[in-house]
Every structure is written in structure tokens, then in C-alpha cells.
Image: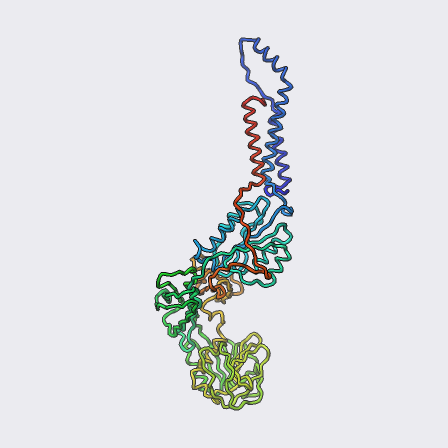
Length: 626
């Protein structure tokens, strides 16, 4: 037995003080009111009766005193809220894990899956006995305990009211490891997972549950899988015309029947396109808009059913993206003269280019990138660098060496997904001769002949570099659109962080943003218009969006817009799981007993105390104890 209200010492002190006051009140002498009467024999008969019953009267006062002290003791111990000890073998312990991930917002059950899960949890709590302790936790990308391990119905009810739908996925492995850690060493340990999915678990959580002796139960939530969604939405600027953008939209029909939908695109709040599409069952349809103009910042896509139909998950019917910012760049070109190179650098209006000869080169301080055309610097540059035909000269620094010359090489191998090759077509480029580049671990071969690497990207001392093992004038590459694209992609890869070029972040994904000098405070405005202040450390601010939609960072003299989208791993068919398998064994559902009112010990103590007070009141007015 333990006290969860007052401590044992506080209970004893309260009992001593209250008992002392009660005893003092009983020791006070009763003063009777003097009344003059004319008949003396009446008093004589009264005195004779009083003398004969003095012993009985004393006994009645003693019983009254003991009754009052007992009432005081009962109420004092009720204040202490006595409970069975947590380590008592008769006490059972249970963790309720309620999945609050994005798919739990599906409306295939009324009002949605999350509310059904909460109602199921209320039934489990209502049916718990007096010797059962329960902890309630919300499961999404993390695990959040909402209550202590308790049998207090009020605390458990408040915890269930606090469960809120998240825009992220659910990490069941982490949730079960949490339950195993909480229940380790406790008697009658069990965990109940209420969720609409039951994917195979890694070995770690299963071992943790077994080691802790936890009895796992599973409650499936959900009824059907009818959903159309925007499964991908991204935008990027064209390298040669940064006023134009390319937009990708992918739609997915997760239903088992065809759906007719209406897709609306908006830019900066204005509608730019509306079209109706027919989506076959299970189909993924992509639409590419290759000439999006006039949008400065925000793009939004909205999907609606064109005809009557079911769409059980509304949150994935909207998608958001931010057009990457255009940044001005300063580039130093070190060349003895190369019109192909210099002409390509003039195509970007946001690029400021300075051209010097190798003899005039004195460092690249103050520039964002430097290009060495058939030249090598005496020392490693302090900014990212592009080396064109570094084997043409022997002296100076180069990030990698060259070996034997290759006659008539071709780009037999291309890493097409590398940022340098975006929008390019280089498979049929003709090259008279080139030097094979010798790579080191960590370098990326972007383009290669079967005899050696021709285009290599890498990093030295924290600075990126790209090397081309050939002279532009020995190829037909400058006559193709691929050449200025390759050059501008390279400079953009040098100067623009990949994170900055992404049109949206996943919910729960952190990003760090560089701020202008002197900024000490940043205000974050979430999609629901709520605001909070973010700390600035070393001129940077870190944001982890928790809601889908547009987020805005504001500081004196500047702002930055960001878009948050659903994590791709959460965009899966809504079909609910019917069973959960852990370590090759099907997890059974929990037994849901009928709600049985269970009064805590303090309530029984208080009831007994009030019953004794009623008896005292009755005997007093019947003049049995006075």
C-alpha cells in the first residue's frame, strides 16, 4: 500500500492535529443555562436520576469521542489517497499506443479512424479494474506519453482528449520499444496498439517486447480503401531562363474503381490551370507543365472529385510547393581565351562574370565560384572550382590527376540523375581526344568512356569541384544546348544548396537557413496562422515543419517561404490491416470487458466516514449519546 495524495508523514501529522482538536473540543466543559423554577421537588427527582446514570452517561460520552476520532481518521487517510504499490504482484500495467498518423484521418468510419481508435481506448480504460494501471501514448513520427501510469479516470480521460491527428507517418517500431522500456520489470505487463496498419516490424522491437515480458495486443482500425491523392508535386526553374519553371504533378487512384477528378493549379493565389482527368483503378498519372511563367513564389494543386464518389482522405487532395529563389552569383573565369566558355556564361542574367588570364589570376576571394580553362592555380582556391582540360598544363594545383590520353572517347556511361546533367542530352557527343581522370574514394564519375572517367564531381577540403578531361574545342559539345546547360548546372551545384532548390520539404524534416548578418530573431508563421519565435544560432535558424502547407519565416528586412508536403512513405493504399504479425505469431485483439465502475480506496473511506457521521447525527438527536 502506498499514498499517492499526501505522504505517510503528512497523513500522520494531519491525523494527529485533527485528533487533538477533536479531543480538545470534547474536554471542554458544557455550561448549562441557568433557569429559575418555583418547584424544588422537581430538581430533587432529576438529581436522583442523574446520580444513578452517571456511569452510563460517561460511557456514552466515551463512545461519541471514539466515533468522532474514527471519522477524523477515515477522512485523513482518504486525503492520503491510498493505493496498491506499483510493485505489487496483483497490480497489472498496460500501455495504450494510439496511432495518430496522417492516414488515421480517413473518413471511411465515422467521424474518422482516429476518433474510433480513441473510443476503443475509452472502452479499454472503462473496463479496467481497480488493480490496473494504464499509460496512454500518442504514436506518430515520435512517441508522446499523454498520461502517467495511473488508474485515475480523470487523468486518463484528459489524455484521450489530448490525442490529436498528425500530418506525419507512424513509427510502430519506436512505439513498441517505448512500451517495452516503460513496462520492463512491472507486473502484468501488456501493450495495446490501436492502428490502421500493421507493417512487418524489425527484429529489435520484437526482441525488446519478449525481454520485457510484454503481452502485445492489436486493435485494427478502418474499413475500406477509397482514395485519390496528389502523390508528387514539384517545381524547378529552367537554367537558361530563370523566369520560367517546369512543374510536375502526379496523381494516384488508390481505389479499386475508376475515378473522374478535377485538378486545379494556382500560382500566388491565382488559378493558372484547371483540367479534368480520368484515373483508372490503381493508376498513377503524371502531368508535366513545361512553361509555367509569372509565378513568383507559391504554387498549389487541389484535387476534387468531378462526380459523386468516395475520397476517404482529404489531406492528400492538396499539395504545396515554393518556386526556388533566384540568386545572383559572382563567377571568376580564368582563361587565355575561349569564346565558347565566355558566351555560355553570358546566358544567365543573374550571373556576374569577370574574366582574367592565368597570369593575372591572384585568387578568387569574393567570388562564388571560379573556372580554370586549361589552367591551374598555384594554390587550391578558396571557392568551388570547375577545371576544364586540367591536363593541358603541368604546373599548379588540380584536385585529381590525369593519365593517358583517350582517342575518340564517347560518353558510354552517364549518371543521369546527377544535378550536373539535368535537362542535358550528351550520349552522342563527339570528342576528338580526352585525358582520363584519376578519381579518389568519394568522387562521383558523372560521365565516362569505358576506358576512363571524363567528367568527375567531388569535394576537397569542404569545397566542391568539377573536372572535364577534355578541351571544349576538341568536341562538338559547344554546338549543342547541352553545353550551356552543363555549365550553368555546374555553377548552380556549386553555389546553391540542394535544400534551397527543393520546392517542398517533408513534414518532420529539418532544414537550416542562412540569415543575413545581424538578424537575432525569426518569427515562424505556420499554415494555421499561428506564430512562434525561433532561436538564431551562428547566423542560422532551423525549422522542422509539422503541418502540411505554406510556412513563412520573417525577420527584419526579409522573409522566406517554405512548403511542407506529406512524406512519400505515408502516401500508401488506405486498406486497413486486419491482423498484426510479430515474430511469426499473429497478435490477438485485447479483451474488452464491460465497463465496471471501480471506486478507489479513498472513496470507500470517505463513504464510511459519512456513514458514521450520519449515525452520530441520528444518535445525537435521539439523545442516545448525550
